[in-house]
Length: 479
Image 1 (cartoon, rainbow, N blue to C red):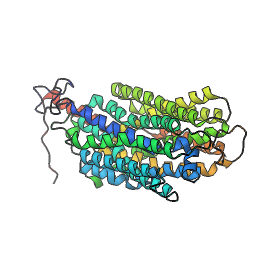
Image 2: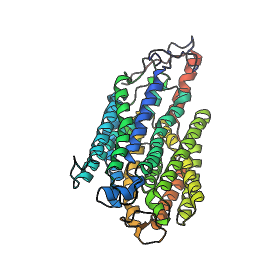
Image 3: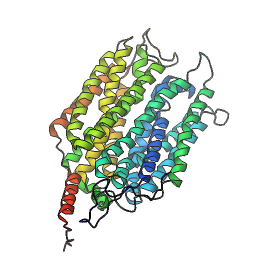
Image 4: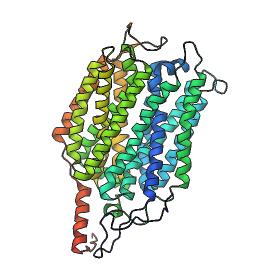
């Protein structure tokens, strides 16, 4: 491991000169913290998506219905929405290290409780589902601590020209976990007809515990401080607003309101589609394995898209233009997917359209988080991120969309179905129509009405101008 206190040098980011009494350092350990946070995001996403790719087998194993399986995903949204503000407060005012450690151990405890639910000799069969819900809820409480930490880590440890990239790397670990979860669940839970499901679910949930435990241990022993001894940029040394003042200032910013609603809706729609993808495809003859592969392709394409947007944003600083362009293409891809998914034997087209939706839909995610920080600066990073993803918009809208789309699904029978025989088949045509109408309205609103005010970028440009002139402003106290 590199020496955690070893600076990479001042000249690397061109911020330190003899004219500037301030010295900005980059520390090698920032990459280790980013790795641990990424591992946590990866693990938490896998735990969330334990059941969705195998909704039919999960319903059978827990003696329940696919609606109840959807609620296992919904509990993530509910728990993190309710406790998101508290996690933002912990991250911003108790520190990055405290927030990550709390999230890491909630994550591993939840995974362990879920594993217990797969042992009918330990947990009575009539309470297995309840125990699974408890475990899912505990891991759900971990999610906001883990997800909100990304922008804060990028702001505190990374220089201006690498922040979007660091945010992208940290954020994309979440969809990577979803991708692996989409592939892993149908690969492990693939029983022959009439076989008992106990061993399959014990293996699946046991595998999920490994990364969670590793990340929790590393978070305690490797992350030794919340911020580096010397800041990496001018904005990193600026004190954030007090929590209450930050929320007030944030909600007085009109552009943030629009960003919160539109980008939060994007998070919600992506989450909902990931949750019910198997239920959309299986009535039309697409197997659980194929649906899991589609989910993996969607996420893999999203990771590629996010990597491209992260590099583009760092180079061009055109956050707004990138977000609007990717949002528009995501809607086109979504409409095409809704059309082709209704027909059997269209494996290639379904894969291409769902991949395109992932590329454009998740590609704008880290850009939206960076925009949230930009337009609300100097509000604390975790606070602006929290209200986009969880408490204010993303998860709240996700709950509403999942409930509405589930209500719009219609029971029907078809000879093409690849669903488990013990599960009632449903047609999601009306639900997908609602999905695309909502996405279209939100996208048009973002394109027409959103105009970014890059407050953090302007503050850093002013600081750089002062450095070049060798001028240090005298603090002015207010009367």
